Image 1 (cartoon, one colour):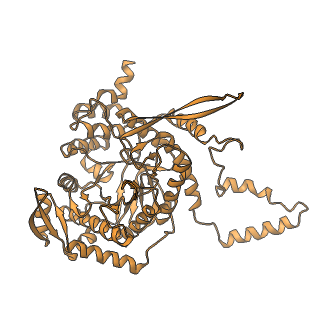
Image 2 (image 1 turned 45 degrees about the vertical axis):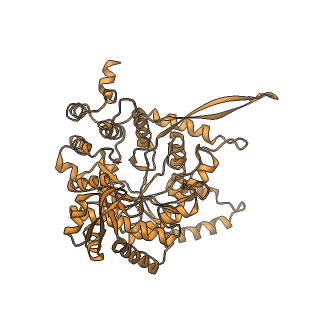
Image 3 (image 1 turned 90 degrees about the horizontal axis):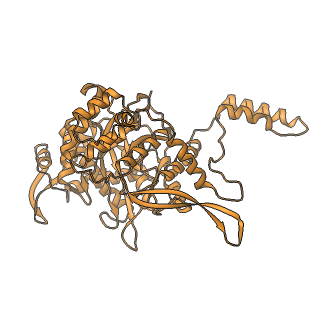
Length: 514
């Protein structure tokens, strides 16, 4: 049984005629000016399929200008599956993403360079030694492979989190380009039974990663039936450029028939127009070009419509994830994906502040609520990210889980049926006939039914704000819970057959040594 996610009545910013205008504008962009392509294989594939391809030079590099006809795009959109399964080690954790059904699943990500440690210290007031408070201290450092294990471990036990995207870049001294992918994939898969989505550092490691997944599920056909791993490919560099290496990565993933996200991440004001219609027309064109390539490579490749749009800060041109426009763009992208009936990989929950606190909660909740209501099937970046996607913090992820519990309760459909109304009328008449005229006796049945929300789990003592301290205790509790690792026999085979995995990740060997 798949994880259920939450079904919403989608909030829509764009009217149907506006969606159609953006679609037509995107098709116009793909024919004029078209896409600049730095990958010869992709250029040949488009040329063989009816696109106009001409050789050009840009920045001293050989490349090709692709003018992609609307007919080629339309045929690719028809070929792309409208329902995509993302498997999991525990099949009860698999996800069924239906592009026509606004059922939202919450996911972690994206890969950050900075890991934010948290520690609490007691501070005594100088003027009154009887008054002491515990305050958090935050320490930034580079992430490691063991941090990734810990993040995956925590996410396994976050109730609202449906799938795992690695939230930290592993930067150990013994991590190289040749072993990075196998280590980040094993660290993730070995510490969660939920679906794992990754981006590749080196295309040379694709087969090692795929073979690892085959060993875990039992073979090639088993992996097709239960794809426990999927891939993100940022093949487009905005504006309108197919990157050489990531485009080749997309091509080879499609050849293996595994689920893949075609993602574009323009910044409004620098690499895309700052006007809403402008960034939407461009980002939609970029994603459509990538989806078209996926289907030209292998018709029927399971693909997600992926977007990470953001607005530029006007003071320094950095990303401004907390700006309302960034949420507007994401909601519009969800609508475009639904227009094509494709599963949508969307973005929310990113903030601009560097540490957990009031600003991070406000910025994150603003986008979490609004983008959730728009109904993307796969909502990533939603746990633990700070400082514009550059920092990950376990404490923030625990706070996010609590906030998503509230959001999930809020978006549930109301229970209003004739039977419920009849019961309510009975209650009203019974209560009005009593001297107290109170409905207290009906609270317990509501609690049992699950229709009543619980109090905020990190609520203080009404005089002090203990949110971070209480969340820290919850974090330690979750990390103390066991993890269902890959079984010893399969783990042994993985270490024998997949080169480059660090010995310290073998939990069974480490236990023997201890």
